[in-house]
Image (tube, rainbow, N blue to C red):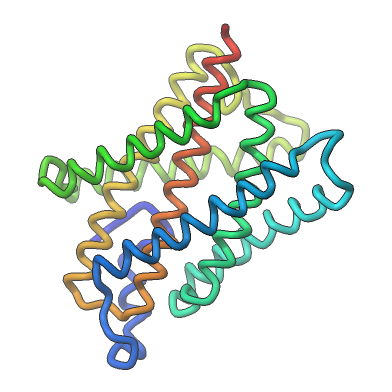
Length: 248
């Protein structure tokens, strides 16, 4: 059972066997409920930061809160990833922190390209439900080669983003990530496809986890991992749409 989402990897269930009997077992309905709760928390927090806005109209404390939320997201991501048992307590906090950041980013895009956020949300939801339907009906079944391909592509994208961030600190900018040329647009389209395919691997991970009788707290962990993928997909769609709109 492989997934390129670092929060949903093969070793997670092995690390989470402690306390299995006390927790109960992971179920699909329980995972869906936890995913809905985390999504609601994220949307609520994003709406709050969206209404506050960014730029000249934002209150003085907003930038500090935004930086704090971003750092909090990274710290919580690492803690939950390596300590799945903390997911029931920390995943909701992560969703709130992540939502604050996503709302601020969305507000900036919306200020420049009116209506782009609604389009990105609709596309993200459409891709999610389309892939879920395809997976549920058996139209898509991730083979080992499929999984390895998605894992390799996701790893390559992660290394590219990391390199662009490090080089950016030294004033060296890689245009491919933000460039609105057709090559830049094709790159963003490729990243969107890979992010979407990660959803298929996440569905497979959740199904196998339920079948294996994983501990009950893994419902929160699986919901957290799925949320990570969904946010990534949404942000990449937002970037792709922005590139396309900037060419008009």
